[in-house]
Length: 144
Image (cartoon, rainbow, N blue to C red; front, side):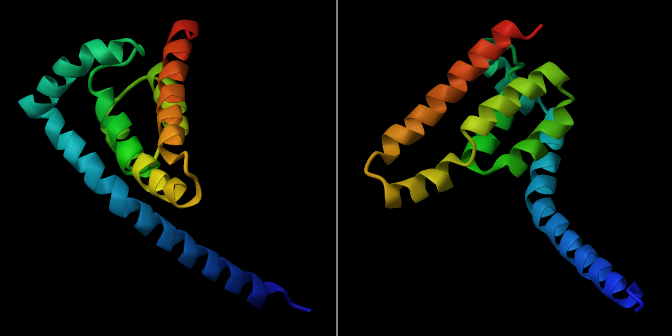
């Protein structure tokens, strides 16, 4: 029995589904990446970074990292990745941001869902934000 046609069919289906997934993610990531990259070449990003530097410094992050947190919390993790990519942050900063976003990503959508299933939706959303803040502070203190 020749398995080649079945294998080729599976490869075609996998490639088609993979390409479809890439296109879906690119619709979010590419525009955010381009917007942040364009802002890097204007005084706007410097102004935002300067204003938010004191707050972000608490987490060992540059002011620009606030855009990554906002994109991840308000939109989704893929938007955060798009915002993160052009900033050229190091591994330590990416680790802190990743941990914080892991706890407090997609807050608008997920809070709307929590509101449908729990009377404590606001408490849960606030707890996620508080945990993200505490985790960021702690990891900043313990990472070299």
